[in-house]
Image 1 (cartoon, rainbow, N blue to C red):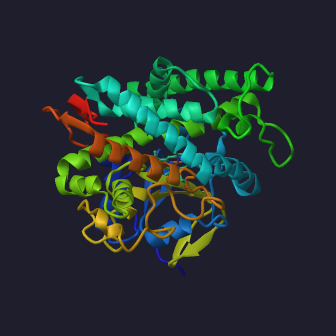
Image 2 (cartoon, protein in one colour; image 1 turned 60 degrees about the horizontal axis):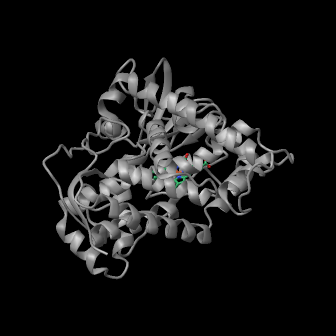
Length: 416
Ligand code: HEM
């Protein structure tokens, strides 16, 4: 016989999830003194789980599937319908190779060079002005991503596209107007990207063969077929959107520079590896992905608990990155914790766990680490600014989380 998984008393915890946000899973794990519990949302049972062992379980492809695991409302805003996030097995691994070829180390260096130049160019225009760091960083990273991906666009167009890409992300934990804004942004952007793919395929455009748009436009699935132009556009967005999303971590990073001045000193001094550790701690400490979902592929037993075929399972990303069994003083911002560890595949999971080539782990982690280092070093070493009174609080109820004022900087000066 197996043990009964602790069950959440509430009849439907959809509202509790909206109320508790990033802490929804860890609050209940503490209450039931268990890494695993069952809850119900929209009339369906959901198994929630946290910690390193559960992360390893979650990334076992034989036990879990992503097919039909993502709610349509998330696909219609954040990810796009029928994209890589909801694929499995051989087809998934094949599509994943495409993404991993786009994010190879030499391509990351190219992107990093573009981003460095844009920080300088944008900073010159901020001189003596007031800026909202999140908006500027989103536009900057969006423009860099487009140039790098083979679709150069003007500064004005990058700003508009960045707004749409940010709105898709901003919608994932939202209901009402914020959700609707994300949906409209996706509809608009998918149209634009589909058009770009079609123009390229019709020979109306020339782009380098190692650019992201070329690789996506001419990618052939295991059956030797091209992606339809809509799907190709969606996968192109799956590159542009998350690079733009690095603005969220840049904003958290600027907050860390403000709150922890000694970290800023060390970053400026440029001690060996410090900027890397600083970037890692930003990814661990601040909330971004709250949890991930997958479905039980076939009945199995884990720790004497029965997992029934077809059950939706949530893995607690935020809680695992704050798990006191893995992290000492988890709620303290402390980059030096990464001196002797850099995370194993299942204990440090801000962008998912396991092996990116075999499972769904994010293929963009080295892009994020690299561009976050570049951005934080630039801000610490080359910008002086005043942080005027504003609401920098981060609500863990709001998904995605962001400092409320999105970090306003005034009297910005660029020091080459
Ligand atoms: C998947 C986080 C940046 C491309 C994921 C996943 C997370 C994540 C949590 C899901 C893992 C899973 O389902 O198991 C983030 C965060 C980023 C970021 C917080 C910071 C901005 C990037 C970048 C790229 C990227 C820069 C590419 C240029 C992707 C793709 C997937 C993915 C294509 C789907 C992978 C798959 O389903 O196999 N990311 N990511 N991400 N990410 Fe990222």
